[in-house]
Length: 207
Ligand SMILES: Cc1cc2nc3c(=O)[nH]c(=O)nc-3n(C[C@H](O)[C@H](O)[C@H](O)COP(=O)(O)O)c2cc1C
Image (tube, rainbow, N blue to C red; front, side, top):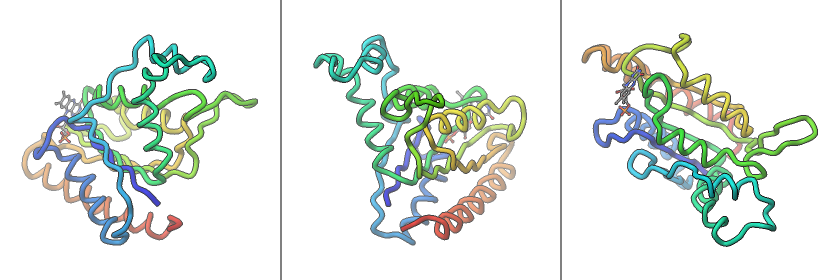
């Protein structure tokens, strides 16, 4: 069992999504002290947006890849290797302008890759990242869960499903910009939800 812990807030100490993902990892490690954790910090170390060389390389038959095209996929290869190596994912993703931060969108463009995370089979597109579980913790200034302006959860569900990750749990910490009391309440509610996911995963994950 391996955990992939990913943060995407560009904020450091003040980031609420970082503190919530850390809470999950701390609880999980208390139960599984030896669990290896891969950490990816997109907020501090964003990955590049894909470019023409990347697109050419990704759709090129592997036997025809030149060294230059291979190097265009190096970061994508590294990110996909992390996803394949882990079976539990914990992602911290703030809501930016109703959706994900650009850093996380750049990450998605790097990891959704034909032959590596999806294939086109007899029945159409098939995701390759099966047997994975994901917890996505979002942080939001306002309140959008279940509303038409939530372009974050439906989008993420669609993308994860496309690459085969169908078991995705969301925790939304909302109203974080609605005053101190609301923020405290939202963080406390998120803490409880995280505790519950830890317990559920503990009882349903093969270790
Ligand atoms: C550029 C930017 C765009 C934002 N857009 C939204 C938004 O569309 N909806 C919302 O509820 N909050 C929005 N927020 C508020 C953040 O989601 C909120 O501050 C959250 O706590 C950020 O996550 P973090 O604490 O991990 O950095 C935005 C914040 C920033 C900096």
